[in-house]
Image 1 (cartoon, rainbow, N blue to C red):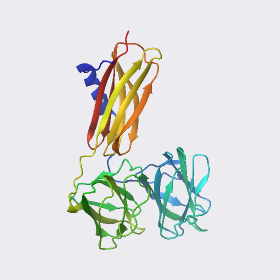
Image 2 (cartoon, helix red, strand yellow):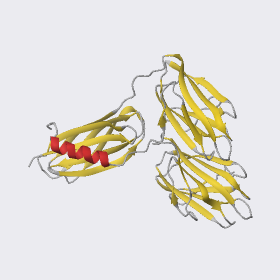
Image 3 (cartoon, one colour):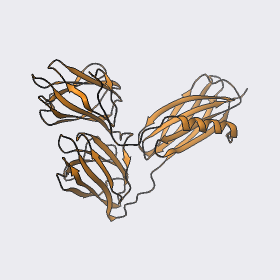
Image 4 (cartoon, rainbow, N blue to C red):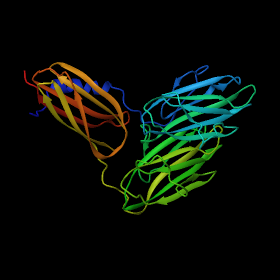
Length: 367
């Protein structure tokens, strides 16, 4: 294998293509009004449906939403009563049509005049369906539905800077917002959330790296109209996540969240960022093998292109969650013709920070 620098014109063209590619969003929860009579409406992590059309009109009215997930993911789903005569009941079905919520261990699936919160581990990759129906007989009921992936850390999570408060608000209160920060075993951290106005307080849940289960009290709780504050010492270096939700149903509430160094040395080693590639080519089978080493302290979109002669071919554009340690990933591309030098450009991107990592490698395929 021979590794060389890339042609300037080709690299300019590819980088231009990168800038035009859509990137993973880096923002708070997006609130959308339901379309009239929602039927299999797509919902994803960081999305909430709430508005004038999010209403069940009759006891036989059914609203349904679908989302794609991978085996091993855990999602938090909140359905909130927003007014009217009745609450809302929820059922969740896996890609094979099996009802996985409610269950024998978690049988309550209706809001009443409050909220219904579910943390559901998923075991099958594919499309999941949320079905909402009226809780009782009557003339209708308004609801709000929010979805957030809690493991792996979701792509819409916002990165916190130590000792820098972030102000935000929930509208409606069952929105879910996620924040991340890098924790070190050499420090003790103070987590603070304070009520800043509105109708409701804020509830906070702390997740350790790679965990789908929040830490128990006192490392979780709600503010009411005051302050929730606790300290903790990380058991390992890594990325920690805070999940914030409204304390009650209703029109929402304002809050401020902050993580500060309480004791010790809280600045961990810089989190790894890597997207290195080692290319090899099998002239007999025409297979290009890409041996990547990847790591990223934030969720990104991973893009890759194959450059051969004057052509640029997109190989993939996929969401990549936080990876706290450098990890080997092998990908192959078949039917790559002998065309002299060919190159692979790989990038990590986010809409807020642009390109966070890039790799460019060339291999000679022969003629």
